[in-house]
Length: 513
Ligand code: AMP
Image (tube, rainbow, N blue to C red; front, side):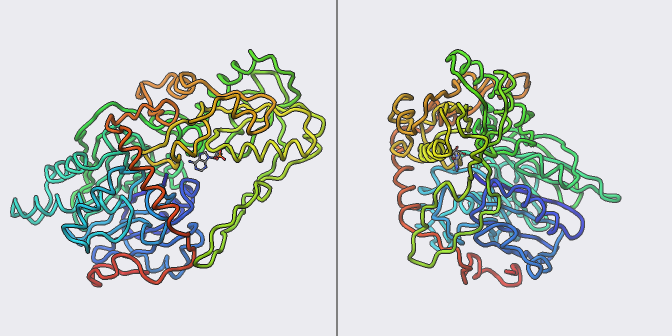
């Protein structure tokens, strides 16, 4: 999961891009980057770490230009090293920058293919590099075929289509071709979010693409529309006109996990308010818990993701809402030296229980999801150690039983506790006095209720139905293997690295800051 933003403005846009990335920090904390274009050259700064740690005044001063693409990275593909940080830049045609959110699950095959053709084109294990290459190759070929200097609309739509034909998975892409314009597109199923906005700036209009609506709110842009599934939007640099085309649409199935865990509650994605979806998920879970006739004193969220749903549950069950776990929001970076493994930190590092709210109480504890089960186990132990009489756990999503190949870091079947254990086994493992999950159907109805745009969602992590229709056991096995190679095979080194991909590019075109 990642956050992506593209701004097509008038003057210096790097500061606004910084603010946008701060607003999307929750979507990825592994790495971040900004690339700008000043009408002459690109300026790029990217590194591992949080936005506030990667960009300093000395970098911001150099990120000149009226166009910017920014990214916050949460690694699902790649080892999490600096060369996998986005945005990426290609030399052809005219220089082209790109960042995306999602996961191209056949990128390993496409990288192998590309490496065999020209090993210099593969500088990372990040799938954004593959999308960039597919696009830039197609655009360059079309330009030379037509003998033109400038891209036509058909060139752009055809090139996006060529990506759709090769790249399998979920991707919301923002790209900029020097002096031609900005192009944004979403995969044909619209799995990952991408919104389009505009703002009057003197006599001209600024445009923005972003993963969540909060970015538009923060920067004062007016929401125009969600980029549709299979739709590409082109902002022509010369005329500043906006062109839209649905290049290839299949069913629109946005990811349900955005509404459960990833997106901020104040965001509206695909016309669905994350906050309202969580309220409705809470209400549906409350209906289910009611039938269990539990003797409960208070409802308590695991902060921060379960607060909204817990409020709705407390209301519906006529319970007191109490905060008994306090989260430290300022957990810093873990510095590790090359060769060291990241030390496992206990949940106490993040959450502190308040004994006065917990002691002697029968608590309905609410959390968003159980993936491996370790977090719930530790939290329940902690709440019991603080004197709780009973801990009933309510999860406002269904059991996560299948890996995600569309960009959320939901691991292999072996690691997913619900993939090979019953609810009763999970309850025993985590040490809860009862355990209630939301039903799959209820989760979806809670999200799409009253929304005219979305009729179905991707819930592959819960029901194993992969909406792209091209994921079988062999693909899952290959993906599991690739994950092992990526994640197990390297340590994360959070020091500044000396080399960055693209350093061998024409220096006149790229300024690494
Ligand atoms: P665990 O069951 O120990 O794997 O942890 C589950 C908890 O991690 C959930 O309560 C979420 O708050 C959080 N979580 C869920 N999905 C993810 C994810 N893909 N990446 C990081 N954290 C997650």
